[in-house]
Length: 283
Image (cartoon, rainbow, N blue to C red; front, top):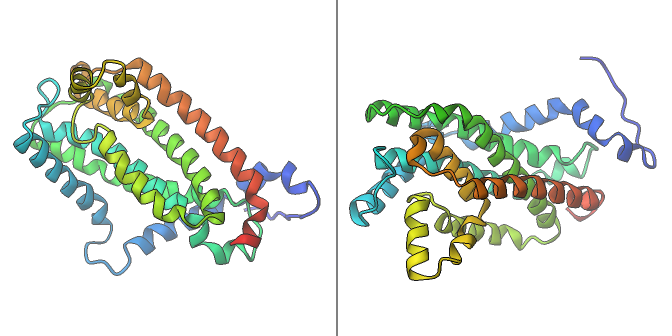
């Protein structure tokens, strides 16, 4: 790797900020792999927890919503496959949001001593969660084999929905981690936001089922509020990739998720860059 010098002078870092991110790409790799190693250090099962945690959640959701509540899957897909297709993107989003929002505070010693583009820290936290997400795909492959269910050809679009989930998680995570540096109360609010999001997102049930009940028992206009949740479009997209045409892909919800992804990324990075200079003093 070629050597380079970082010269800190007025307006220099502003002009070369994104170039510095490329120069510090090795730090991004180091932080990402460090988080993976620390997370599963001194555990008996190690990285197998990336598979075991979502698997247990899928089993619980299947027992509660299918066996107890009597909810049905879309089309001929097994209910456990439908839940798995919704659980994987949701758990990635929830983990990425939790890890990224506290990343700067957790790395306070590093931030207060040396210069580097601070956005690398939340980016590495989201990347770590994405690695867990990729490993947990073993569950989906195992369920497809167990139920002998052949996924739709739409499965080729999974990378697109994965990228969209990454975009939204990173945008919101960057914004929240910047706020969390100044207002430490957010470390207690974020778990509540994640828990609340699990209830209002179609993780253990299909969107068609819940929108039908909303329209019947509340108001047809309230269905729009359900689709305002950007994660709904991502979860429905994942299920559409696996189940196929039996899972309706709401293009309006998908367009909203794409728009929110771009918007939160722009707002998050803009706010982060605005307050980034104060991190070393506050933290």
